[in-house]
Length: 376
Ligand code: PEP
Ligand code: MN
Image (cartoon, rainbow, N blue to C red; front, side, top):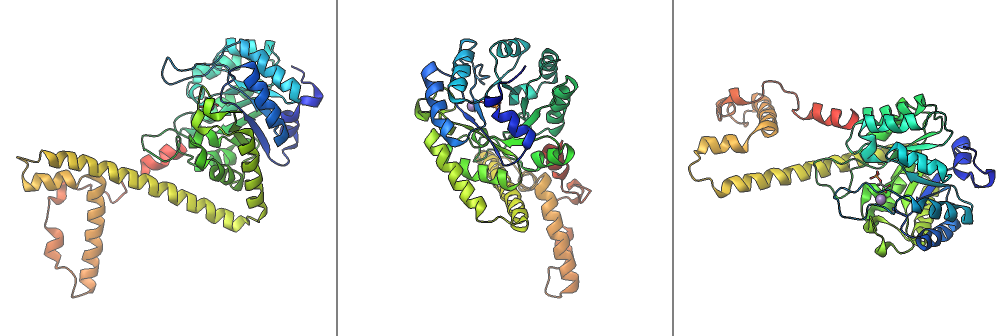
């Protein structure tokens, strides 16, 4: 597909990789007026690509599932009127075919589709021989292999303009973000495939407006190549993802604010400290969510504790991780008591609940799970 030179802002950016890229537009194309009105306002914000969903993969049936094929011509017309290339999500070979017929400039694969190698391969097959940039969102779950696999499938189909989009990960832990950023995953992708540009989609990470600026700034601080932000001319009326869309005016303010902050001078040293700080914050949030969950289960058990012996109750309270922590603590106390006559007597450490039932290895029981979750 040949793109008109004057509207190929996205591909220009891909070639130059200079500065940062901005993809913006509504979660969904809803009407001709909505996409055109939003595009006209966004065109003032130095946007490289106008986005708009046509087919929406919604978790539950019955919600707005996208305007469908007729929206493609509205999206393209809004792009032509504002001299912006346009992009949308494809989930099937039929979507690809309809997008190419409507001269959509950039395609992207959504998080739910990236999760399925068969769906990704079907899209890759339908793109063989087509010269169109493809953006690939990370899969829903924190699985770097699936993300890399989807990128490889596109490249094998001959797509050489592939962009990764970090949109956060869904995990079992309740978090202030809709999807956890788990920054180490896009950074690991960067080190394994340094040639692939990576954009960050703070809208889908955050799920609500207030966190978007800090995630957007963090993405640029860690060296990602740009942002994909959802923007709707009247966010409160949006038919999908209303809570996370910014008005074009809010988007312009956000870009100004983070540009100002970044220009205040983020040195590589404080960038590194900032990243480590963020990792610690995320771990702390995970820990406190897990402890809250644990406490609520204990409260539940305590509610009908009748009939549980003191010893059994202790073993309910002190399972798995807690036993390892208690054991570690006991060892420390033991060491201290050997060195210090005022420490606990040895017998107190060795007695207590059945030592045999504690994990034999001193390895943190969740350390494997944590690293494989984050880096798999
Ligand atoms: C979207 O971009 O509107 C979307 C559905 O994104 P994701 O695939 O990241 O959930
Ligand atoms: Mn959305």
